[in-house]
Length: 459
Image (cartoon, rainbow, N blue to C red):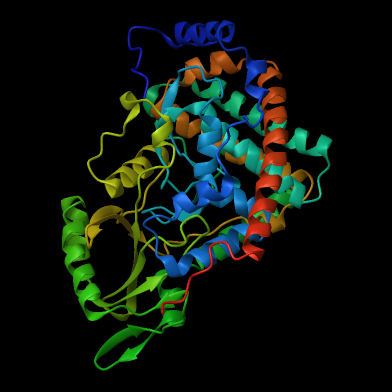
C-alpha cells in the first residue's frame, strides 16, 4: 500500500490526487481493448484449476457457464490479467480483489446487529484502487445485461455507482480517522454510509427488510436442524453429495488437530469461548462459484447441549490471483494465506466475525469463520430498474469506505473529482469489458460442449 502522508493535511493530499490527472487523465480509465497477445481464456481457466480438487472442476465450470455474470464471478484471474496493463494513479489500497456485486452481503456482528458489507476477501492484496472499482463496474454492467437493461441503462447504472463512490470518498476525506473507521453499515439503523438504501424509497426498503428477516433466520441452530442427525451418543452430518460429503478418518483427525492451531490465532477471551464447545463431526462442503474445487470443510460443534450448535467453515486459501501482476513492493506481509484473508476481513469490514482465524490442513493454508452467523444476501434476482441502480450504488459506497480504511481516500477523492468525468469513463470501460465477458463466456460454453474440463475416468 502507499505510505501514509502524515505530514500533509487532507486538503493537500486531495490536491495531490487532483494533480495526478495530468499524468493519468480520467478519460483514459475508460479505454480498454483486448491486446493482440491476450492469453487464451481456456488456458487461463485451466491454470486456475491447478491445486483444486479435480472431481469438482466440472461443477465449477458448470456454474461459470450458467451465465455471463457467473463467468465473471469465477474469472477473477482473467480480469486481473486484463487489468494489468490499464492506467493507474499509484494510489494503492488493500484491495478486496474480487468486488463484484455478489460479494457484498449481510452478516451478524458480535453484538447481534445485521450489517451489509463486503464479505469475500479470498483475493485480497495490496494494489490499485482502480482495479477494485473496475471489477465492480464490470459486474454491474454484466448483471445489468441479464436484467434486460439496454446499453444506455447499463451506462446509467455504472455512472450512478461511480458517482456514489466519488461522493463517499469526498465525504470521508475530512473525517477524523476513528470517525471514518467506526462508520456503521447497519441495515436496521442505517447511517450516512447506507444513504443509497435510506433515500431510495419504500421498494428498496421492503427488499432490505425481507433480506434482514431471512438473514436473521440463517443461524447455526437453523442449519443444524437440516444437516445433522443423532449418531450414537453424539451428532453427525447428513451426507448430501456433492454439497456435503464425508471424509476419511485420517483427514477428520487432521482437521481436529488443525482446530487446535486455529484456536491459537484467536484472542485469549475468544479462545476461552471456544473451549465451551466440543467437536462432533467434520465434512466436506462445496461453496460458491470461484471457490468450487478449493478444500472447504464444515465442522459441527456442540456447546451447552444439542440446542447450542456451532458450525465453523474451514476454507482453503490460495495466493491472490492478482499477485503475479503487481510489483514486489505490494506483497502482503502475512506469512500464511489464511492469515492474509483474515487480516483483510478485519481491515476492510465494518465488523468482523467473532471467531475469524486461520490454520493449516494437510499443509494447505486455510481460514476459519462461522458458517451461519446471520449470513445472507440481497439476491440480484430481486432487483430491477431503480432498485438495481440503488444496489450498485450501495456496493460502491461500501467499497469507498473500505478503501478509506486502508488507503489515502483524500488523494482518491481529489483524482476522482466532483464532475462526472470518471463516471462516464468507467461506464465506457464496463461496457467494453461486458462485451469481452460475454465473448469469453461463449468460448467456455462452446468448449464445454467439446468436453473441456471433463473429469477423465481412471482406468
